[in-house]
Length: 207
Image 1 (cartoon, helix red, strand yellow):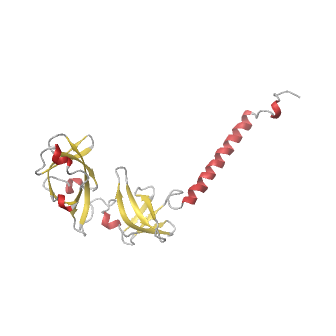
Image 2 (cartoon, one colour; image 1 turned 60 degrees about the vertical axis):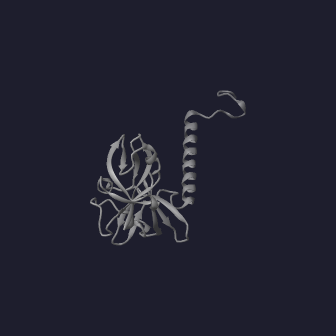
Image 3 (cartoon, helix red, strand yellow; image 1 turned 90 degrees about the vertical axis):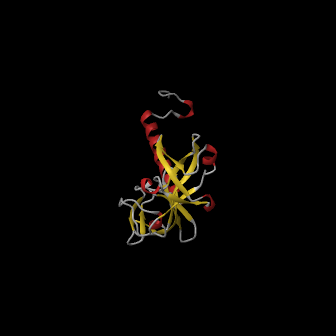
């Protein structure tokens, strides 16, 4: 089975190196020297990794037969794809491959059905579940432990505790109104403590 493990970014320097947006939890395994990777678009590959290093927190790769900046720039935005055994699991129990998460049912803690995971979107800041609702609409759910509280592969479900407004926009409206009322109450209380100005232009102490 094929998995996207990285996206090639801009060229770095003049000797053919490129920056890489890593999309795997196992870069040492998938993106090490000697790895042969398919590409999307397919006609740009396969690409063989010659060397790699970390520079300023970013992974830099050099591919065989790419020796200058022009060649490196020609690879920009290409997806790197690795062949993975479907039965293979990540070493860390808290990590998952995309194919393990696709088609999981998404439910609330009380069992309420939210939808089904149809895609995993890998962003620089975090990963997102793309979830198809029963009515055909889609919702994006950040794959962070504060929201996704459980992944149960045996039951084929992901349990979430979404903040107000993530699933139902009306919840966000209600929450916003509640916050506004709370803020108004605080302002009124502060005004009473400080003493409100008398009406009709009267000064305090005027009869």
